[in-house]
Every structure is written in C-alpha cells, then in structure tokens.
Amino acid sequence: GIMGGSHCNENGGIVVLAAELTSTLTPAPAPAPVFANLTALLSLAGPFKTFLSLLEASNLLTVLQAQANNTQQGITIFAPSDTAFSSLPKKLLANLTADEKKELLLAHCISQFYTLTDFQDFNNPANTMATGSNGGKYNLNITGDGGAAGAVTVSS
Image: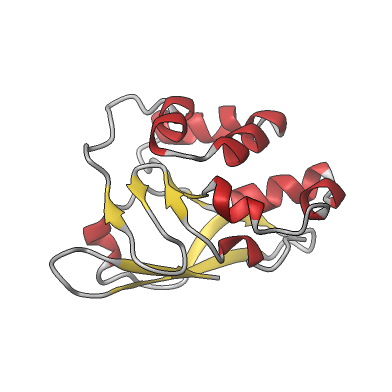
C-alpha cells in the first residue's frame, strides 16, 4: 500500500499548477502546452527531481505522458517537491517495493486535467490513478477557497 501522506507535509506542486500540498496553490506562469512534455514540465517547474527520477525508474513516465497527450481527459499531477521528499525518513522510499512506489506515484495523479478554477467548486473525492492491492482507490479531497486567487487545499 501507500505510505499515508507524510510526504505531503512540505511544499509540493502540480505539473500544470505550482502547489503547496497542505496549503495554497498558485497558478503557473503559462498555460499547459498542446503537447505536454512531463519531463520538461517537472524539470522547469521544480524542484521535482526526486519525483521525476521515481517516475523514470518505475517506467510510469510513459504511462502518464500517454494520459496527458493521447486522451481527451488529460491529467493533473500533484508533484511533491524535493523538499517534501527530503522530510521523509531516509529509508522510507528505499524500503518500498517497486509496486508500492508505483502506487505512491499514481496517488499523486488524477486522470483528468483540471484548472485552478475547476478546483474552486470541486465534487470530492478525486479518484487518483492508484489502486491498492485490494483493488481499492486512493482519493484526494480538494477544497477551493472561493477567492479570486484560485487557491485550493489538497488532502488525502
């Protein structure tokens, strides 16, 4: 299974949105390109080096890239920052199996593209792309502040 959200305690982010997972999200400086290159987005919007390296090592980058570019739904990714990963106990990620790492990564992905405006009146919970070993879904709750800034709070 997924380790219970402790990785979300520091600054995190979204591929198309810059984010702080336990606080407020702010808009990215530019809209998502027609072809979303997730490696480039995570590299430029970061620091998301740890998240990106885990995606590459797990072979999920291809899956997420296809979801972003080859489907009508698109994708929203809540990418924890390197700071968020550094706050985890040193051996936590090392002790996860390959399947557990995939579930952890997929728990940060929603197989639908959403803007900050969409999150202002969001119908929770958001089903992530992660499914547990028992077939259950991992969900996120997203709450908009209703303000002009378009801030949202994400929790598991």
